[in-house]
Length: 362
Image (cartoon, rainbow, N blue to C red):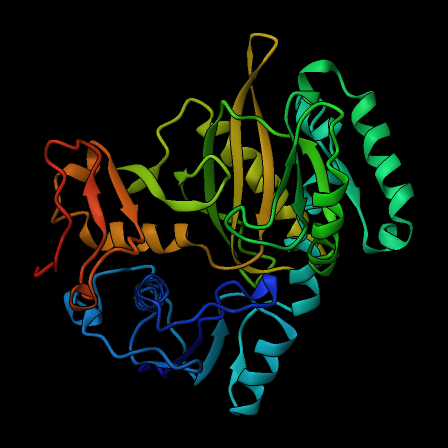
């Protein structure tokens, strides 16, 4: 049966209540690359500037590209707003229920059953919007909580908004020095994003991520698509991914990768039991504590991720690029000129031979 059309809603950043401007090159590029994970034809619910990027690849070159047998709509992040937009067009919304998405996308979700061997998780505490009612009491709670931590945990700590992306909106501190003026100024924004998580901040760390897909069919198992090493700034803002693609599998090539995949599958199964399905990603990092390497699960991204896009691009180019088996980088480079919108920001990790494909011509 021939496939019908996909209608995509590229509501990047919707968890922060401020969807991205798709006219900006970085978000325009992400939207167009995301569309390559679907069999054509693809239409946009949110206007996306035209581009020839889809002509770079053979539409049938990705065996995991999604098919639909009826006109269907899907959002990057399933929300009440995206659900209404899709339904108003008379389309079938194939995304997970927004209420379930919000529950799992909450950064508190991964802390509901913390691993005892993860000291950062055991120190973490979740604060709710209701805790804002008495600022003086909230300040005391913060100081008292930090005061109960061991000295290593007090060195650096952070307040992370429970709904946010790319490390944005964090408030940092150290020791028992809670800057009242900064915190008071940040509280309205933090509470608008569902409250915050207080936890120790680890500067020396290796970031990891794993991307999965949970079928909307209980008889089909959770599928690990692959793993990557996120490239992030010191504050945690996303810049890109690194990985290695061999034998049809993309991985972070890190010693903790098998453990991450196992724990991520367990967490994804918990989300599935609550009613979640579809693409999802789990962010983590490896750090040293008492001379031993430990892993901390940061968050469950109950949506498509840039990692899914990275895997899709690598799958399509695996038989054309030799360097990806030795290591590659994928970056959403904001500095690329408007005329370079067809470029695929995939390079070798060997900086002596790095060459951005501008554009990839097959």
